[in-house]
Length: 289
Image 1: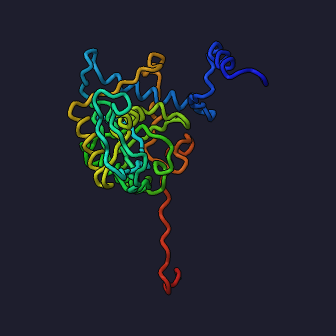
Image 2 (image 1 turned 90 degrees about the vertical axis):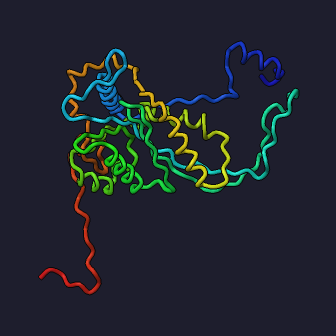
Image 3 (image 1 turned 30 degrees about the vertical axis):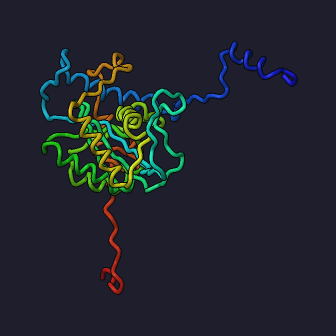
């Protein structure tokens, strides 16, 4: 190897089908409860699939309607502006056959997208925010509460981000008991959440290479994208390993969390309520006699 030529080395790697100049990614299963939590998500997807008939039409709800949504956030979306105008393609040339853009750009700030896909209707529901905080998630929950008929249940498939299990979130959920149900994906199991595929599609179709003059323009274009997607909503159907799920043998009460807390992903803590907030005494106020 000390004296091998570059050409010979390339031939050796090519014959062995080894490409060290490329990197592929994988997601490692971490945590002893990965398989059980993945099973829980598949149970919910199985239940959703049973809401459709053989022709793909939505069946009427039996009992209390349950709206199942796949939810996640996409923070840090950069609003980028160009420093010079784009140059149009030049016909009949190889070098300038595409739009030419200056490599330099200007950062105008970042936005966060909170979004969910209704797995029964295919509707995509967005909320664009300047921040990525607990209060933003609570605002999204309030938006869902306004959107769906009172008395129906709203079930969210979501990850274990701290905003989803914060005391601020739990405090709000305690004001609307029985309204929301959370089903948590396992750690390093984002691929189990169907909204991730929607984000990937949105990135390829709209965000890649986008240039705007302000954060406000980026926000408008994001909402416009959702409007166009919702013109003809298409329900997302999960199929991976669903044939192994027998819904009659499953206990949904062991999967769904109606009230969350900081350790909501643990079964032992699933029914705990948020502690009452401590009130600070005003300066000069005496204690209890």
